[in-house]
Amino acid sequence: MRLDKLLANMGHGSRKDVKTLVKKKRVTVNDSLVKDSGMKIVPEKDMVKVDGTLVEYKPFIYLMMNKPPGYISATEDRHDKTVVDILSPDHQHYKPFPVGRLDKDTEGLLLLTNDGRLAHQLLSPKKDVEKTYYARISGIVTDKDVEAFASGLTLDDGYEAKPAKLRIISSGEQSEIEVVITEGKFHQVKRMFEAVGKKVVYLKRLNMGELTLDELLGLGEYRELNPEELNYCQSIK
Image: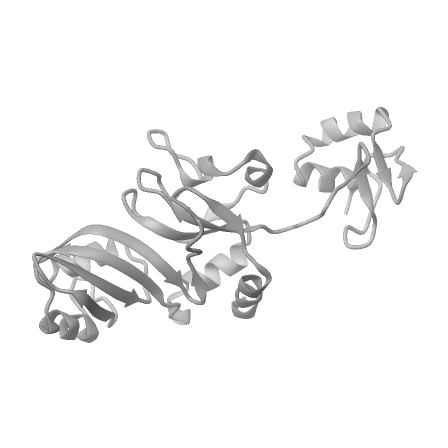
């Protein structure tokens, strides 16, 4: 890989900016001053420093976010703030994107990455990656609803949703439930409850495959995946 490409990818400006850094003798490779910003290096072996600080090469980034309400699951939007706006510049320069979507008013687990292959695998209908949600429902959720979800519901546009696992936590005027689905259609959980005559008033995603929302993350907080979580991601790619 060219040195200027690596440094540009790691947030040190454009290739022109990197050339300026080299001219100012601020870049070293294996502790030797660099004279050519286009020199070839091996990122996994060569030690690159800018102003004496080691540049850690990471081609991909994997972030777990506790998505807050009011943010769009997108990289940009003309009218609303996006989940990418929450990220620090150090993370934004990797150009991560949300894997799948959570509705604007929905909270919970959201994975952001620039690894397109992983995103494809997590979202592929063939993989049947389970997604677990906690919800509060306006209306009394019954065993009949559990059976309807298990059989597969017909949504408002005629789409036949795959069978889902519905568990009643508490039942009353505002019921609490957990539901596990393997799809990610637009407003799917909300539309599934509408199909049985009920309305979702609060929705939070808890799990996506073996990734579980970190309870220590407050709304709008995020962190990089830990080694165990990364191993899971690598296993499904």
